[in-house]
Image (cartoon, rainbow, N blue to C red; front, side, top):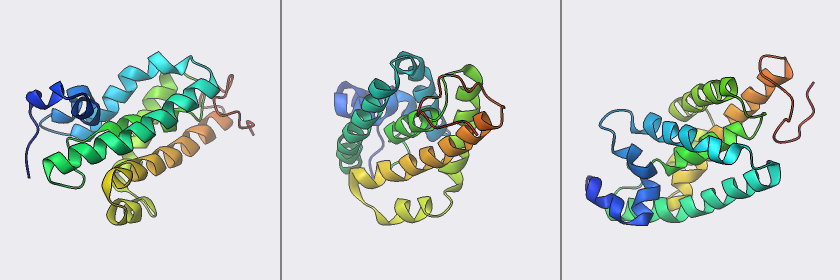
Length: 171
């Protein structure tokens, strides 16, 4: 198994897969990858729901390719430095509610919890789906679970509900 270095960031495929270098963090690269997603989030949060979802879908499809490519180059299925899946997973989480700083903070924590704990079926997908899709899919589902929790928080009034991103009715 190889270890990626700063030199790897010269290849745009590795640059994305390694979360613009955040995956090179010596500790908690997944958390740093999620932080990269949080930093990029304001750039896409105001695009409106259709464009936001299109960006997330394209980021997912791109992630399947670049994460698979980088994993093959590293010689391991899901190297901890490959964090584009965390970026996309956080964006999926945040699609559930109106953009706000509290939503970003709570969504960050919820996504990391689901990504780390991997409740069923997230853990099953993590272990049984290979390649770039396998790297991405468990974080997609962690993002969906965290997004549902975030949406419920907005539904009970703990977060701003105006402009609900996915258009779900607030209970």
